Image 1: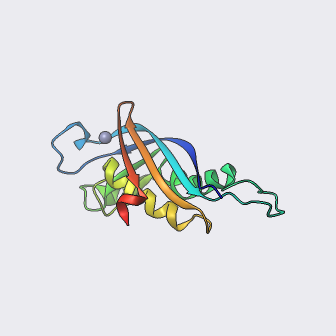
Image 2: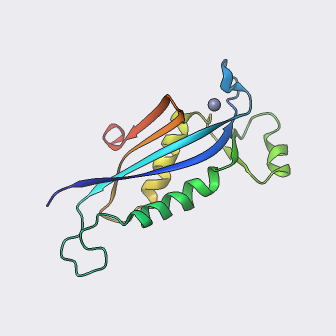
Length: 147
Ligand SMILES: [Zn+2]
C-alpha cells in the first residue's frame, strides 16, 4: 500500500505588525499570503465507501483549513496581545486577531500546523506546510522536524 501526499493551496489577505521589530514589518501593513497544506497517508482501498481510492477528499481538506484558519485570518489584522492599542483596536474592529506570539510568518505557520493537526481525520497526517508572505519569501513547517 503506497503512502501518498496530497496538497491544497489557500490564499488570504492579512495584515500584521511586529512589535519592536527594526524593519518594514514594524508597522501595520498587509501581505497576500499563500498557504500550501500537504497531508500524507494511505488512500482507502476497496472500502466500499464513496471515498474509495482517496487519502482525503480535497473538499474535506479545504473545509478544515477554511473553517479553522482562513475564515479567521483572511482580511484580518494579527497583533500581539501586548501591542499598543491592541485592546482598543479589537473593541473597535471585528477583524483583529490577537495572539500571544510575534505574528511573523514563522510563528504563524507553527500555529497553523497545530490547528490543522488537531482537525485532521484519523489516518491522515500533516506532512508539511509552506506559507508565502511575499512573492519571493516563504517559510516551511515539516512534521519530521517537529517530532
Ligand atoms: Zn509583514
